[in-house]
Amino acid sequence: MSLEVDSKSVEYYKASDGRIIAIHIKGDFNDYTKFPPYLDTEEAKEHILTAYAGQDIEAERNTKAHMTDDDVPLQIIVLNRPKGAITKAHYHVVEERTTNTTRHQILLCQRGKVRVGVFTKEGENLGDAILHRDDLILMYEGHEVEFLEDDSKLIEIKEGPFPETDERDKVDLK
Image (cartoon, one colour):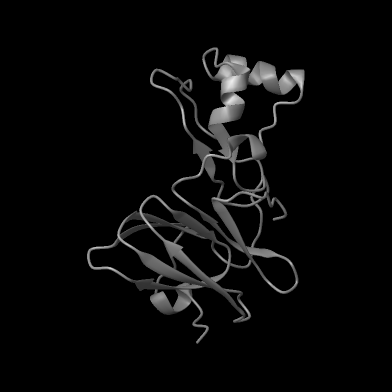
């Protein structure tokens, strides 16, 4: 988990040993060219032309950003395509599953304002991410959530399967 790019709309929360614990991507993100895919090989460019129905290579660089390392279980890609852009019908195969010690989770704020406290699994408090509409946070380890406004709405996405009981699902840090 070493992909870390300087962007005004992306904040990384790191443990004292340097590992990334969470990534906060703000709803106003638009730094596409700072993130992969860099499309710096002919093979990569050819793939774009075939998989994306003739998508212009320069347009691809300016409308797609891989936000996470290729080796993490939950991948985040931000797309901002014009009307009529097409990604050909497809599905994704599983080549190899990485083994991690925690189930990764994404919170997507649809409305309102939410505070997400970010913690390592050892309990180190790394600070708070304040989520507003269209913000999301990918968390690799510990977290707490506080709703700061009435009618705030989050979508939670996490790795499954869910254990049989809540006690088996999580470890309380506080």
